[in-house]
Each structure stands twice: as C-alpha cells, then as structure tokens.
Length: 474
Image (cartoon, rainbow, N blue to C red; front, side, top):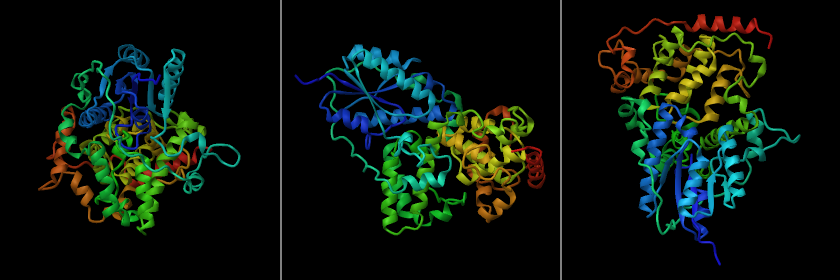
C-alpha cells in the first residue's frame, strides 16, 4: 500500500519554487505537500534589516504558493523541533524535507532535529540548493580544505553543475490544512521603525523579480562587468546578493546563466562566475572554520590592539555617515537608505573602520548585520576579515585603502557622492535627503548641517595604521 502521508517542506533561506530540490522531491512523491516556515529562535534572533526583509520574502512566497493552490503554514515557536512535532501530530505527516544551511547554529539545530525525527519513525531528508559545491566535497590534494580563493576556484571551475530544476507543475494539497499564524502578527519590521518606508522602494522582492534581475544583468551589464562592478555610481553589478541571501534565486540558476553568457563571448561573464564562487568560498571557510563568524581567523591577530568600544565617538560618526570622508559617508548613507551597499563601498568603509580608525572588525560586522537586507553570515564575516587583514586570503594586512584616491579613481564625476551626501548642496539629490527620513530621530541630523571635517584624514589614518602594524610581530 503506497504511503499517502503528507510531507512537510520546511522553508528557511530558500524562498522560491523553481530549482528547489526538497520541494521537487516532495511533489514527485505523489504525497500531499505542506509548505511550512517556523519562526524559531534563530530567525527571531535576526537583526533589524535582515528580519524585515525575511518577513517580506515570506509574504511574497505565501502569495506565490496560493497561486499554485497551496499555502505557506507559519508557526512561531522558539524550538523548531517542538513546532515540527505539533505539525506532525496535527497533519499525520510522515516526512520532513528541507534545504541545508551551513552556519554552525543551523547545522546543530538541523542535526538534532534529523536524529529526533528518525527516532520517532518520521522520514527526515535534507537537500542541497543554497550552494553549488558542498563544503565537504572540495579538498586539496592532501585532503585538507582550501584557505586561499584562487586554488579553490581552480578546483571547482570545471566541475559539472546540475542544471536548474523547473517549478513543479502542481503542489499536491492535503485534504485539510493545519492552522497558520498571521505573518503580520510577527511584526518582523518592528526594529526598522520608520526606515521601512524609505528602504522598501529599493527592494526587489521574490523569485520573479530575481529572475528579471538576472536576465537584465546578462542582457545589458555582464559584457562590461569587469570594469562596471567597481563604479559605485553606475548600475554595473547584478545586485543579486539580496535575492541569493534568502534563496529567492539559486546559485545554480545564476551559474548556468553566466556559463551561457561566457559561451556567447560576453567579456565579464567569467568574472561573474568567479564572484559566485567567492560566495561559495565564504561558506567553505565557515563550514571548516566556524570561528570566522566571531573570532580572528588568523589567531595571531588576537593580540592586535583594536579599540572595541562600539560607542566611541569615531565609531558613532562612522555609523552615521559623518566621518568627513566623502566616499565612506556616501556608502554608509547608501546602506541606510537602500539596505545594501556597493561592493567597492563595502571595502572602503571596512578598511576605514578597521585601519584608519583601528576599530575591531566585529563592530562593523555587527552594524552590517543590523542594516543589510542582503545580509549573509558567511559573506559578511569573510568580507570584514578580508578587509581588516585578519582573515583568510586577505589583502596584505598592511595595505590601507586611501578613500580619497579611491574616489578619484572610481567616482571621477562624483555622481556617487552627490547622490548620497546632501550637506553643502543647494539642490541635494532626493536619495541623499531620504537618509534623514530613514535615520533615527535621536541622531538629530539635518541636510542643512555643515559637512564635517575628517575625524581622521586619509594620510593620518594610514600613518597610524602602519605604525600599529610595525609594532606588532605578525
């Protein structure tokens, strides 16, 4: 007699229907499928912007499922195991399928749940999909993990990557649906306060928007991507990090689009593929050395005398985009208005905080985690440690980006700075003014304020950083 018990498909950071291995397997089983999201302690612990963006993604996924005559069942419970147990009891489900995650907290949770479900006679299966290359499948010839990006790229660049799966034609529904929480009751945007209205127009929400974003990038931008990706004032990147972070698009879909573009002779396609693998490398490192999320990856940096007071005046100026260094301030305001920041800006603001201000990278990592709608645990950690010099495959620790020469090189016409800084301008750009609408009122800033003098000049900061490095025995 065939098994007709329902399958719970537990959505997490895989908010799509296409190229979804767990969902496809459930649908192909012929059994009823119940899509579920559990707002457990890990998602409840997200900071302001990532939690708000997750809420938007869940709302959109629920609408997409309704269009397929299905539903997204929402449950808020700190213990995901307890929530699953209740759903299994209420629905008679005989299996739970999910897509793998790789941060240590998720791995520990999922391992416990898989063991517990199996002990109870419930089938528990995890599937790939968030990464193309499972971290344990990429090894050096000595059987070790890679610590440098280029050899990692050389290992995986020629591998066969599965073609993306299509969206299931139908999602078999159960005879009756379990109760669901109301998403609005979770109030996932509470910490964003009035910033939600400012950031929302910059969000490209959901699977369809992500696919459109990818298609537009391949049609119009990838050809010149080698150069355009470094120009913050231009529309020269894919902007897919927002959608990849929540799985509204899969890396497989991006990879195969990049391969097609390369076959068509589009010059920037291989660079795009390398950027996808850079993301994979971050997860590879997080899997093998989870300390990268919290501690110096290079342990010899533990004694470096970074200041670690997040309330210090220069850190406060950095967070508010008031350092007096225009490239830094423009990027920090872009972050507050859009929830994202151009990659060149991320390098500059991270270098300025950790080198010119000699402030611990963890302070910057925490601020990005609070403000980024494309927050990703592995990429955020590796990016900050790369910039600080304490991480793997880092730029030489003694290299200090000069934000003044960087702006001359990458924002020659000052279009980026003009878009995001209002002070001192007779007719500020509307996006520059939005910063004052998004910021907390208690910051007390106004576009009529004078633009500040540098808290630390480019030359003085560089000198101070190099002096600190010279006094350390690395």
